[in-house]
Image (tube, helix red, strand yellow):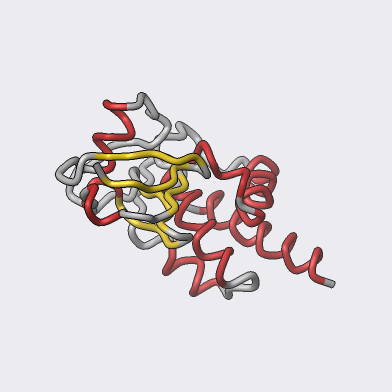
Length: 154
C-alpha cells in the first residue's frame, strides 16, 4: 500500500489503483467528478503538493508521500478560501459539475502566483471544460479572487 495524505489526513492507496477511482468508489469522495476519464475535461482535478493534476490519469504509486487536496479540502488553502468567496459573489457556476476541477486548477494557480494576469488565468483553465457558463462568470470570479488577494497583501 502507498502512503500519502488526503486533505491533511494520512491515507493509503493500492499502487495499481487509479486516484479518481480510489476517491469516488473506495472512499466515497464523490465531490471529485469524473467527466471524460482520459484527462481532457478537468472535472477530476485535484492538487498534488499544491499543483493541479487530473486524478483520472494518476496511479497510486505516483502519489507516494504526496499531499493530495480535493475540493472538500479547498478551504484549507488560503487561495481556496478567497476563491470560494469570489465565485459566490460572481455566481461563477451554473450546474456545478465542472466547479470542483475549475476551483482546484485556479487554487493551484493562485497559490503560486497571487497576482496572475488574465492570460495566466486563462491558461490555468485550459484543461477545464464547462458547458454551462461560457466561462465569463468563472473568469470574473477568478479575477475577483486575484483582486481580493491583492487587497489583502497591502
